[in-house]
Length: 216
Image (cartoon, rainbow, N blue to C red; front, side, top):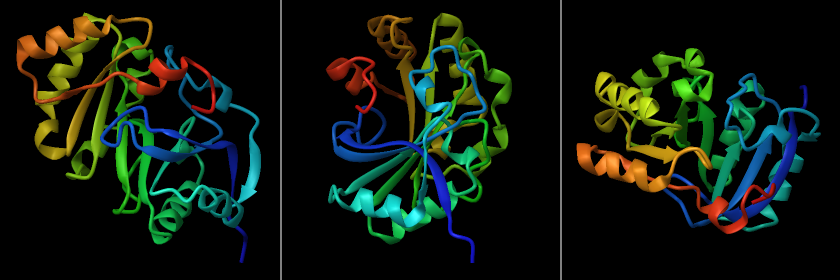
């Protein structure tokens, strides 16, 4: 039987900066590689390089932190076939597992125990045409849909998609986040309040604490 291995950029322990478990100590497993090139990407260092690690070695390193929460991220983690067995293995180990993925890869085969955080790409990202809208059909209360908003046009687009796909009813939460350094967080907050949207406003906690420093 072929041993499963994955290209890993880093494994680190930090506070979750986004989504439902924001602020909670979490082990992050950052996989290498991404087929997208969003203009606001803050993890370009994960596009290339990385170290190939056996699945068992990854699990051993994660276990050393004795975490409750584990987040698999990238890059785009689902671009590696080994991501699916990694997610299942982490769930089997008893962790509360989340997956940070773009809207461009199918999430159909992801273990149902995993909280899928799907980052739908707005026009301002430069990758709006990569969204795989079929993913919206499989959303559950455990999942979250995220929009990174670059400007007012992005906000109006995201608001339309919120209604078009009934995302507030399909997913556990819908997250609206201002693109770091591009949109004033207060502006986005005002827009959400003015329209009484059923979404959670969020800013990236880790950026407030550590800026763009990798490994946080």
